[in-house]
Image (cartoon, rainbow, N blue to C red):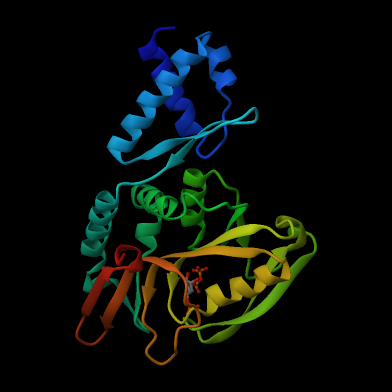
Amino acid sequence: MKRSERIVAMTHHFKENPRKLISLPYFVDSFQAAKSSVSEDIDIIDEMFQSLGIGRIETTAGASGGVRYIPDFNHDQGRQFIDRLIHVLEDPNRILPGGYVYMSDILGDYNYIRETGKVFGAAFKDVDLDYIVTVATKGIPLAYAVAEVLNVPVVIIRRDPKVTEGSTVSINYVSGSSRKIQTMALAKRSIQEESNVLLIDDFMKAGGTIKGMENLMQEFNATVKGIAVLAEAEDEDEERRVEDYVSLLKIQEVNERSGAIKVIPGNYFNS
Ligand SMILES: O=P(O)(O)OC[C@H]1C[C@H](OP(=O)(O)OP(=O)(O)O)[C@H](O)[C@@H]1O
């Protein structure tokens, strides 16, 4: 197999298996190529990935070593994506009663979801995770988009325990967005004890939902390694219950009467 053909095949394999350790003998055997040739191929791919801003190839030495594609996303491209999203969101017709913003079309458009997954994937690319955890319903597409980039399974917390889930652990919480006591339930068998998890949701207002997710993770002795929300909004009459989170958008002002809506980049772009 010629170098150019090997590089196409290896690039495809890396993109299909993000963050997975791949031994050099795997490539040597697959392409019947010398180890030195494969190493040079990998250097070329690594250099091109980095120049495109889509990640790097991490090498682990030793007998159980190998190479791993760590996805990344060019920060400027991420910012350009968010600026496009802000332009789409700053539409008075999106204002809903109670100062909410209609975003379901965004969550239904895979192009937006895929880009969001790449930005969050870059934000948490080096974090060791066992699960990406979200809560039904609107957080689900985001969770799968990030799961695809980080190669991590998704766990969905439900609001209504179902017999099809087996025995469940549940907690009560107050979602500032609906100001009512709600229940979150998660099947006992869905998360191993002592797991590392990333919490993700589409929207955070008072933070009660995320706080509920954190409390539920404590029931599994899981460690929350990160919290990601696509959009956050100020909740003027409730102090934020959640501090350490990453947001891509911040809904700064929503005024039903005047139709004013102001959206700015989230804290991910503050650094
Ligand atoms: O920070 P908080 O004040 O708790 O609000 C954020 C909640 C409310 C809203 O969910 P809902 O629209 O209630 O439910 P669903 O996602 O099923 O549409 C949103 O998706 C977050 O989960």
